[in-house]
Structures are given as structure tokens and as C-alpha cells.
Image 1 (cartoon, rainbow, N blue to C red):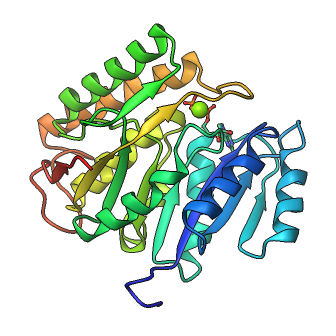
Image 2: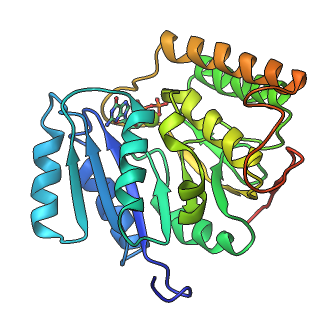
Length: 263
Ligand SMILES: Nc1nc2c(ncn2[C@@H]2O[C@H](COP(=O)(O)OP(=O)(O)O)[C@@H](O)[C@H]2O)c(=O)[nH]1
Ligand SMILES: [Mg+2]
């Protein structure tokens, strides 16, 4: 493993029809963390994003591309990317959307916070964080989903649905990722729930989330309904002390192993 002062880092970027965003986001990552590796996980995007990723990779040996057969969902793309990263020597694994919503410029600050925790969440809902260019209905959905999930699960993370995260490799190595079935939005909640139950610490780092300028969101009614029923099931099981609620594997946890910071 590399020198802990300069951890080797990979950013996993899932893409589905991000033709107009990929060049810009990879350039921003490269500027923010020059040594970063980038793994694009493309689900055979009809708009040719995979070809653009291949072209970028041919010019930059630290850009890698995983081509998958077809659209299999955000959660599945991240899990494939995490497995790829764990089979290599990376100390730090980052998940980030490819649409430019997650500011690559915050990455050095987020990585520095790994001094205090095993997971850092780029958070819209701590002091200093914000959302730019979201319509009222999307803000309401996000706020409502966060509030419901926090209450149902008893977790103190303010932005539990955030998609911008930095993990120490040992966290992902410790979780039973092959058992994660959640997609989209719910995948984010599922991962926080697993991290908390495994007793790892989470710190939230304020980010400014800016809605995409190019391409379209893949958010759907299915994704919202999935989150609602899964979170409700976990919350009920947790209160009944069974299944993925009461007993935790690995390190001890009181379900409150979280903290927030402002930076
Ligand atoms: N590989 C892959 N990427 C996906 C899939 N669905 C969404 N993404 C990517 O996941 C990121 C977030 O998706 P987005 O539609 O912006 O969701 P939103 O930010 O919640 O509206 C973007 O980089 C998408 O291209 C999928 O099925 N497969
Ligand atoms: Mg987006």
C-alpha cells in the first residue's frame, strides 16, 4: 500500500448518456487531485459516452473504462466499480456523479476529512452546503426523503441520500457488497445504513450541489417507491431487533456513529 500521507485514490464515475459532461468532469477531477485515477462505468450509453471515455483513457493512463452491456442502474454500476477498485491497490475510493453536480473542487477537502472518519459524505444539508438550480418539487423530494430515512432508521446523517462520498478502502472491503440490491437513490441510504451498522464513522463535508446543465436526470417514480418501501422495512426490522436492524456485524455501533463538520 502506498504512503498514507499520499493515498492512492480512484474516483468511480457511473455514466449513462453523459456525452456532454464527461470531458468536463474528468478535467475538473484531474485539476483538483492531479494523481487521481478515474474509473468510468458506462452502461453502453446510446449517446456514445463509452466511446468518449475510451478516447479520454487513450490519452490519460490514469483513466480507466468499464463497459457493461446495458443500463443496470446506478447502484449496480457503483458496486461493479467498487469491486474493480478493491481488486487493485487503491487506499481511497470515491463515488461521484458524472453530470457535474458534485464539485470535484471539494475533493481535496473531503479526502482530508478521512483523518476524522472512515467515510466522508459531500453534504448539501450541513452548514455551508447548498443546492443550486433545483426545482421546488425536487428539493421537496430530497428533503422529505432525507427526513423520512433519518427518522425511520435513527441515523443522524443530514444528507443520507447524497451521492458524493469518499471511502477508506477498508470500509468497502468490510461490507457485504454482494448483498446490496438497492438501486438509485435507495442505494445511497442502504450504504449509509450498512456503514453505520458496521460501526464506522461518517463525517459530512459541505458541498454546493449544482443541478446538471446537460443531459437528463434518471430519477424516476420507481426509484422513489423503492426507497420508501426498503427504508420502511429496515426501520421496522431495526425496531423489532431483527434482520438488518438489530444485530450488527463487525465493529460495535449504537447507530449514532456519525458526526458533522463545517469546513
Ligand atoms: N452506469 C450507469 N450510470 C447511471 C445509471 N443511472 C444513472 N447513472 C449515472 O449516475 C449519475 C447520477 O444520475 P442522475 O440521473 O444525474 O441522477 P440524479 O442526480 O439523482 O438526478 C450520473 O452520472 C448518471 O449518468 C445506470 O443505470 N448506469
Ligand atoms: Mg444528477
